Length: 444
Ligand SMILES: [Zn+2]
Image (cartoon, rainbow, N blue to C red):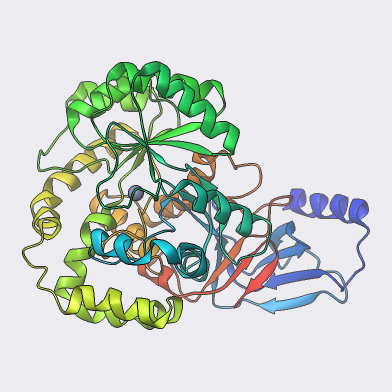
């Protein structure tokens, strides 16, 4: 407590603010700071410009005269959420062939801005896009991060690195770079780093161990992490042998019906500090919509999307019988094995992130994050607090942004969400995020 007060005084001395003009305090709510310790009751957060300058309780955190005070009594105040796996170029439509065939020309005008807004409104103040058309996604990052478009702080992989191009996009839509051999893999990683990629994404399971080793090694040398989309145990073993490293992620970990991974795989995951990105909602979202079609009428989905696109997305669920869709079948078949393997990894001490794959089928940006948080609690057996820490602090480490985001403390960006509820008692309360503050700015 004394520490908070001292820190506040020091910051005041250095910033000599125009008191009352640009200082805002959030006062009264319960603060969960992202570190996983006891929440602060009757909390106070003081912000100036885009930064937090003090965090404490009402008793030990003086609020300067003239500060604009926002009452957060009865609410929970938390760090803005970080989603380490999103797609800005898809909005939850059930048919990718139709989607890219219809909307490739509307990425910049409609699709990507809608995705960005939906994430922000859902409390996602930072996001990492793992695979999109090269020119559009670098453009989007620039637009958002320079303040021209509303959206989460945006980090990107650029195109997928694969052995074969994705099938459902046109020849003009460059969402894949095909890797020919290990030398080519290194060259492509260097090229992406030069273009400003924040992370490298490997997408299929057909890259050889030598190609993966080249990608991991070159990325790590350049200070980049790698996110690898891999399901099968053999492919995971190959990636581990190829050098997937600390806080690199295995996206979609847990899939398939097998109840356990070999101990050897689990030990390597823990030893190499690889982070688990389960993306359960990307598999469970379709089951949820088929079992409750009313989810397609969520007013937030209506709010976030252009009218004609929303109607088309809704139709893709309501006018088609998806009960025979392979993803639905898989969602039901894989569930027990996924739960068992995620618990095996958690019990062994693996690092868990929150990763949604939002934008994919039946996985819209407006509810992906809170649904994934609930699923991690139910399926991986994480406590509510463990899930919250994963969604904030751990994810900031995965994105190498832990010095500026992920926890509520003096000096970090004022990326803060106020939740009308108690996520420590009920994680589904995370759906009631209101309002969102990004860089000290109230988002409405
Ligand atoms: Zn994805």
